[in-house]
Image (cartoon, rainbow, N blue to C red; front, side, top):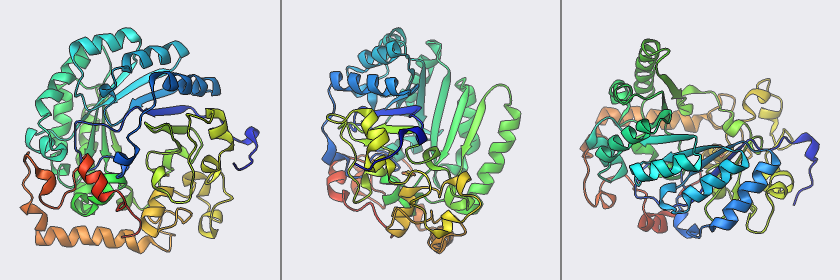
Length: 396
Ligand code: FES
């Protein structure tokens, strides 16, 4: 454990409880680790309750229940009730599979504050193709259930080269469903999205066109529905302040109890992430080497350490630096000052070249049973997790 002064470190505000890596969907951009099948063990109910209580005692106020699909845990209602009793503001992040009217009522009674429902597209064909499941109609029904229970309607759609041309129709769909908030989250290339990067990567022109349309709709919908466009950081050439800083406000707890500073961190080599089955949350947060590794400025190289923007972006994303350079301590290569920016430009140039040859057009945009074994996309599933578990990086 690295020594560190508690006085200089703020307590965590956000806890993301990844209750399980199990999921009925097989999304090609899933943010779970590619080797998730090797970490199949899950905390039991009592251990989760202890972890939540310790995090709340430390100061955490926001709690997301995520996965995988958190509804696959049949103790979800019990955990929500426990978290509500502790004073957390609770959020369920779900694909919608398993959210029946009865379950939505039970979660409401347990004190759940908020539900975020994911869609993959505005069309059944692409929604079902990208998730390799027939779930579009089900998600539409679940949206109505969420609305009927009086929750704020929050929809999330991960954007990539296949659905960017549909962005206007996705916004229309959200409006029809009575959404209060729509998050259009451009794909972040970690986990399964990293494996599928070449197939998912849009061109800069495609992104700009979609963003312009989003702006028009945002103005039209002002006061009725908020539309958030999460920056496609390869194209924006500005490193993001990832997780608001490593170990600054956010703790992810993986299904097996590993405490992580972000969803992707467990792929980083040479870091021992604290196991909350045996390590108290405060010990993990304040004193573990894992959470202290990239806090503050001491870890920065000269490019970041001497940069006027270092307080703004904190050097960008450590996982992206690792995937693109093989070294998590490098400047995030999306930054124009990074000596590795050429790698990002080459990836964007490849997307342009690919579009000219239209090689991707051969991929069928519809649900195909067994699609995991076909084409260029690697679907998230246990068999592929075992097969591709060590293939997530770095620097390809
Ligand atoms: Fe891990 Fe950005 S996703 S630091």
